[in-house]
Length: 394
Image 1: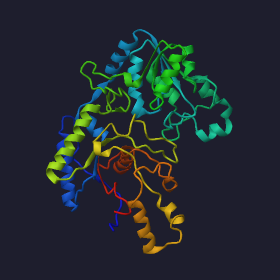
Image 2: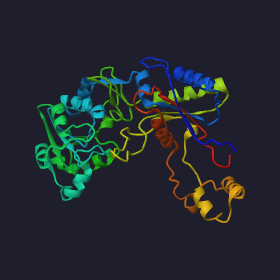
Image 3: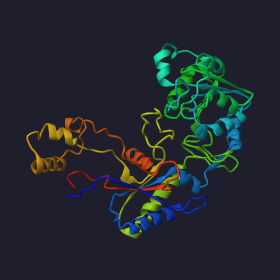
Image 4: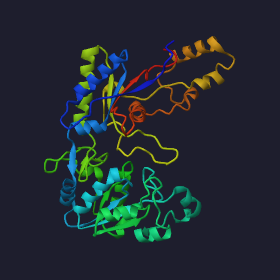
């Protein structure tokens, strides 16, 4: 038996800049690293590339002015509501500045005690212990600050009401409420800034009589004055690049072409058919900070077809404790191997598969890659994952 299961390795590459040939860099880096470490590539090994370097190499950038121009074109000289933005300087500060610059007046509605992905406006434990009855109330920004003693984010030490008021400028007002329909008291022209609940929020507002409602997907979903864009996700998944420029989430068609080119090139050089994917945030939650890391619209915006699907796995400890409770050692190992080899092609509803949540392969692999590469100075924007599709019987 092969003694190793899944292995995830960060692969160091040159520093990637706009205009670089990312396909060649990825392939060369993988081949150089595996040769140096005497690692053999196999069919269905996975090469994962962080979305950051994909966007950088493709020059998928836009400025505050580009955002403002697009927003102004969509709303004209109107008061606009901005509902449920996440609390993040990296993710949202420049988007907020651009949106504020493109409207006559901006009303920002924050949720509490935390935003959609877990960034706290006020400490969750304190709020639920002492103020839970206020969950359905609405506040102005000043009222919220006074009532909760000007709360600070535990990691950044920042009061996001004050910060977002500053970014929004003189013609900006902050309200704090968990009910999106409260925005209709101020304006019927609204941008839904939430990520994973955006369509639900938009539809509720339209049913309640909103005049014009868009999501962040609808801003910079096409080029503005030669800017970058994302035809499917717009501003979602973007990050701060400089003080006046953002890097957008990789454009889907171009990212898909990249992963297929990398797969083809690796096959030509190795004779192996690898899976290739672009990954962003992994879908996991920090147990201490309570932040759900998935601030991107999806974990993977592009991947090769051989990474489609979900796991179809048996729970080994269930088999060992139940069907094969009387067996031990080599006899138990052989019995479990036989069970795996003969398992049904779809184990849904089978008690022996309980606890094996059928998440998509690309979401699982993207989370593994994100944890492997990190977000700081590791210098490994490419990850090689091996043995992921093997099991105990292989």
